[in-house]
Length: 395
Image (spheres, rainbow, N blue to C red):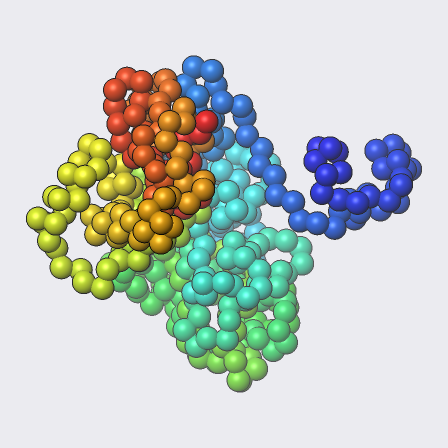
């Protein structure tokens, strides 16, 4: 670690690695450095081991599933603002089995999203903060501002608590909606606030009851949506630095709950948003698709298509590649021709046993971060070699 820092920093002549050597400690660091801690690849599979436990193995998931089988009820009832009886607290302590609470949005137990593509201050997860001091967390000045919470569990809510954030003066909520949804498509208004002055100074809290209407719900998603100007009377900043909800938990989402991923749009595949825009025409041309598929290893089972790229996208990739070659005098630019390179599966490998657990050889040029590889077992397919920052293969 010291060697890495010495290569990027210019330290003063202190013995900073001995007691009393420097009065500044980590404040000596002036340049941003990003580091990633991983275990070494295993010798047998060459896989990079992951550290997150399966969601199904978490205690709170097992508790909910067991309660469903036995008919028991998991009811969390309000006693005081930000007590230890709420659903967010329950999730953040893994069903009250952990001694210390952890923000569940910071570890993928729940998900919080902001209506802003880039939130001005704070992070979406700060909406659930229980820090002693409120965090500067708010949306932009947008009359349609909102925060959406994917609880990862299904609940019948009976009450909820908010804490006003610090930051802009006079930005406390006055007119807003608490909404619930099962599918993030159809939203029910649970509580509508109009000129509500319950929140005032930064850090102030308030709790409101929610009608326990079993004809609505259960809800997986909760949304706090701006519905008018805040306490300034002029702006629409949505300032929140604490949220809790109470009620009955009736089910849990196990499969299909993917933490820390942006919602997919029509250009997205299972590996995230494609950087290649769709053609202006979305008309399906099956003959053209079949022609494109015939040019790729494994045809319709090519990994590009399995990753969410369409035949139109692949065709556009090929077209752009040919244009670059033509502009370069029909010779690919330096660095794009990796043909003949011996490779093994890389840190982002997602293709089961296509490689047969062995090595392979690159047999084509790199096109938009994808490359064709023929494995020693005779199998050939396309793999990410820089696409969206991922590497299925490595030297």
